[in-house]
Length: 291
Image (cartoon, rainbow, N blue to C red; front, side, top):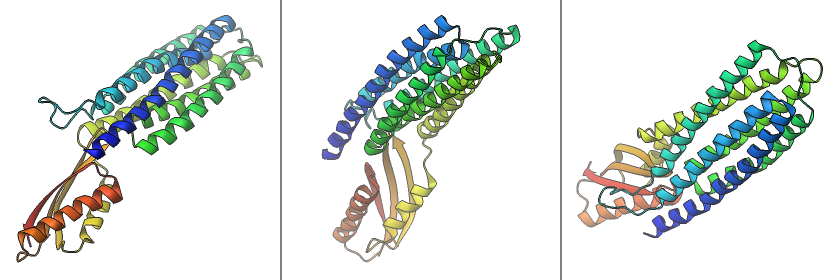
């Protein structure tokens, strides 16, 4: 119960990261779209639309973090932890949709031809935005690792992608100043690809988790820890899955067939304690069989 409350407190901390992202995206999206239209920069407008969808994605992450904190009920016996992962997947769908729209708009502009380069103010806006998003990325990355949140780490990955997108936007706009106006829509094209790439990476991570995929290396680490516990003769079977960012492990261990029931129970309890303490496993189910 204490561990569950601690996890809920961590999710509440994760909400701060989502809220900071929302505020940053609101300000930057408004600034980029305004200056993008004023300076006629396709790249900056694409970057602004990207940040607009990031607002929706960050709101989805915030909602997911809040839903994850709901206690177990009769329809969700294991709790609502996976809401966090579902929110990350929703965010990836939103990002992919916008990325494809940006790609289409950029390709259309390139074929139509663009003769006039945007004002250099657009480039400075892009560079300033990149700096802000990199600071937000560092904060969310640190927070995501601290609370082991898949949703916050996905948000951090999106923050970093946005920082690079803004750098690419600025480079394209600066290049277009040297009678190379086509560099601006080319930068918008690259922005679109980067958005789609980040969306795909987040989708792969979340779908792997939702289909009960698990890191094989972690499984081996768990097995090594269990094998070194006194009284454990062997590990017959071990499986693990994630509920949100919480790892749940099912283990079948082998012990001496002549051991009293009390000692066998004590060994299984030791297995639970070790995995929770050394590997931050949320819940452990141990089944004991005679060797």
